[in-house]
Amino acid sequence: MTSRLLLAVVISSALALLIMGTAALAQEVPPAYAGLKNPFPWSDASVQAAGKVIYQQYCLGCHGVTGNGQSGSDFSVRDYPQRLENRPDLYFWITSEGKMGEGMPSFKSSLSEQQRWQALTYIWSLGNAPIAPPPPGPAEAGLLQLRSVKQVEAGQPLAVSVILLDKTAKPIVGVPVRFYSRENFVTTGLMAIGDATTDDQGVAGFEYIPRRAERTELVARYGTTEASATIIVTEADKPFYHVNVGIRLPALEPEVFIGPPSASEPTEGQAPTSALRLPGGLLSWLLLFVGALALIWGTYFKVMYHVLRIPAQPLTGGPNLRLVPLVGLAIVVALGILMVIMVITGPYSHFHVTP
Image (tube, rainbow, N blue to C red; front, side):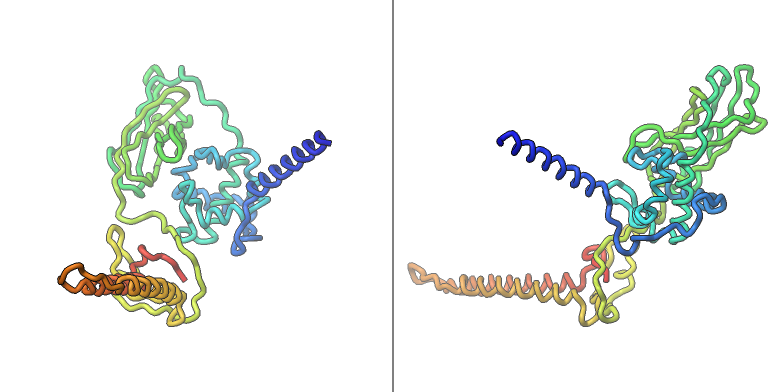
């Protein structure tokens, strides 16, 4: 009987773990995205071409030219197109809202809905791309030289070129050269960023848009022959992504806003100024929050009032010790008023809950 009971417990535990694992793997798509389908055919070449441009501008820096830059999201694997076809709403949701915990920003403010679907359609094609032939042996290459500017601003196109010669100093024509950047963000190592084919002079040109301000190394590779150059990427004047963070609550009336424009439109690199803002009008949920604060603080004041007004009889004739509690109560009241003012006039970046 004991062995049967033990066997039943083991089987039940295994089933529970299986169910929990399946639930963890299945991601629930929010109602706003649930059931969405790609409005374009996955195999539409024109849509894939438009998506490729978007991918190169926004995705290539992390995912690489072939989509294998992230081990957890390898677009080049053969079953990835089927995943997209089975759950397009899931991947559209991830593209739109991002995964901040994994370093992926939200793109719903940077890209339109159509552009996001175009990018996903191009990503679908990466898993169906033909397998490239192995690169030619190193014996064919005699010289590979990479040329580029030494400094560029983040977000600006960076022109890179190489010259490829054989051992007799003649140009090697019509062969692909792959370009890499040495990454130390999310992943570490060389990440493919593009390909170019040499012309009749043995020159191959490539344009790359760096996204992060850092000192980075660009590498060109033909077979086992490599050339590299160090590039300094400086800070850009404006951000590339608009990250939306907050809780959306219902607004019963038009918003009430009293304050300077800089409070509602903070400038990059500067703290926003204060203003009075009631996101839901005079019936704003923010007033409920302020009321709760006032109730808590009022209760604290009442307790302090009863505690501090307990008379302390001096042993000898001295100053009236009841003056100290009055000062303490005044400080409590002042701090409570200051806290309420800070809440209702707090800058957007300090109290960012959107209606």
